[in-house]
Structures are given as structure tokens and as C-alpha cells.
Length: 316
Image 1 (tube, one colour):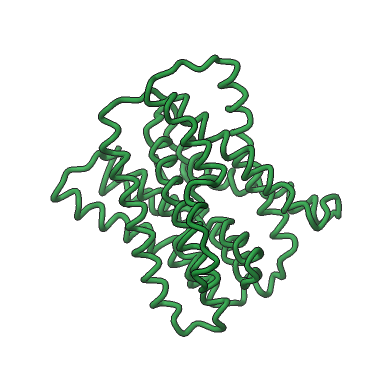
Image 2 (image 1 turned 180 degrees about the horizontal axis):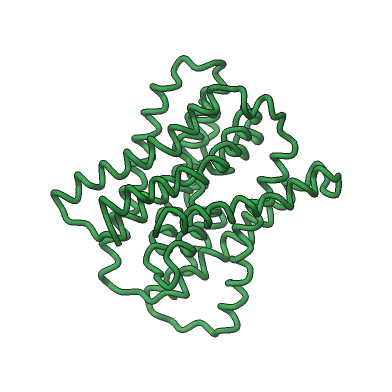
């Protein structure tokens, strides 16, 4: 994938936020619009995307090794970036803002944006999409444990049962027996899941546009912590990922698509989960919204540039 092709794909994705922004500015969306759409996204659209991504692809026993690599590395990478961000933001502003910046640095938009990006970058190749699904399972486990703790600073706020009992993970677990056993799902059923799953990217970007309409531009562009968190998420995280993967590949050869998939997923912007946690647990929701928006805008440039480096290190 060349720079221009990747750039156009990412631009088209970000443009999907325009309707949400325009409708909110025109007062056609109320104050609760983002919250209502987020419920549809979390409980219907993203779980359907997980199911359709699994059922559209055929399982091969050789995939299990790569799945294990993806899951294990997803956990390790998020822990590495978490501790790096803790050091970077140890003296950055008020405590709630520091906590949000740390969470924003390692929780990436894997499900809402990562899977659709894989589908667009590698049309006709289901492997990277499956790897994104596996990474998303690890992401949800980390988000509902370390992510909640990072935002709140309270162990009591962590609910371990949420590691499994969250809609995308429940949907993935439900679809796994069909995937592993090669059960042929009726085309009509798969079509329903496909239609609902394809709403994930547009819905997530529309929600982003709605939230952008409510953010003060001064807080978005004039807070150095927002830029620093964006740099950690969009540059440090993927480069750290690629560096570790290259070192591992020297010792234990890895599939090229495993390296590329993990690298691209690590380059995704900050997940909206950070904002959701900040709002739910009374954290710094303004900083969370700003970092989420800033990383999504800046990824228009960072993802294509990082793809150029990927083409040199691990061509596919």
C-alpha cells in the first residue's frame, strides 16, 4: 500500500465525522445524541462486526499460533506503553488530566476503526481482519481493567467480570465455535450481521463529529498535554510495537501479516472508551475528548507515513 492510497483511505474515514458535526451544530442532534448513538454502536454494531468478521473467514489450524502471538503481544504492548506514559506524564498538570493522558496513550480505536481500516487496506484478505478481532478481545480485557484503573486511580472501580461480559467479547466468544468448527451459517443470517457490522465505522465517526461540535477549540488546540498524548499514541506506540516485533522476528520468525497487523493496529487513534470511562467515573472528560479528537485528525498523516516504514521493514 503506497502513501497516497493509505492517505486517501484515512481521509475518507475522517470525513465520515462531518455529518455528525454539521447536525450537532445545526441543533438537529440534541445533547444526548452521542450517548444514544454510542449505545447502538457498542451493543449492536460492533458485536455484529465481530461476528461477521469471524464467520466470513475460514479457520485453519495454523492460525492458532498467530492468534496466540497477537493476543499475547497485544497485552504486552499495552502494558509497555502504559508504563512509558506513566513516566512521560508524571508531572503533567492536574492528576485527573494526567490519568486521562496515560489511558489515551495506549488504548487504541481497535474495534471501531481498526477492523474497518484492515478491511480497506487489505481487501480480499481476511487474515489481518481476524488478527484485529483477536487484538480487540485483548483490548477490551485491558480497557475494562487497566483502562478503568488508569482513569480513576481506584482499584475498587475495576470490575474483573467485564473482561468477558462486554458486548464485543461476548459476541466474539459466541461466534468462535462456528468459526473453529467451520459451520456454514446461512447467507441470509450472515447478511444481517454484515449490514449491522458495516455501520460500525460510520457510526463511530458520526459520534466523533458530534463530540467535536461540543468541544471548545481553544482546549483542543492550545493544551500541550493533548499534543504529547497524541505523539505517544500515534508515534511512540506503533514504533515501539514495530521495534519489539522486529527483535522477536530475529529470534522466532513471525508471519509478515502478524507484524504488519500489529503495527497498524498500534497506530490507531485513541479509543472513545477513554472518554466513556472519564464521563462515567467523573474523570477529566474534556481532556479525554480533546485527545480522542486530536489523534483521529492527526492519524490522517501519521498512518500513511508509518505505512511507508512498514513497507520497508515488513513488506506484504
